[in-house]
Length: 56
Image (cartoon, rainbow, N blue to C red; front, side, top):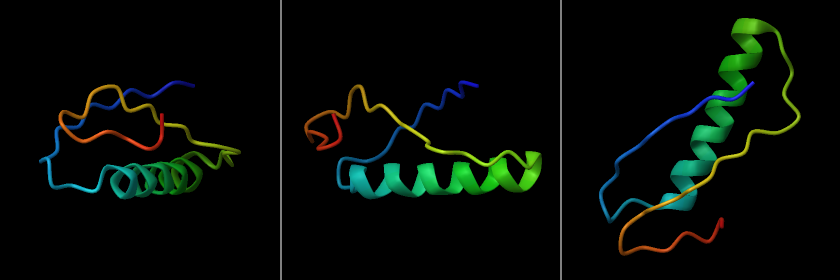
């Protein structure tokens, strides 16, 4: 299953913290609503403006 999500955040947002929270929340929501346990949720940050992500 592939889920696409586009976010626009301000430059002062902590991108790694935001991504970690999204991954955790998605895994919990999918497991509670569908009963499907997830091994891993991965996110890819393509463009974050002046701030560079440590995740790529």
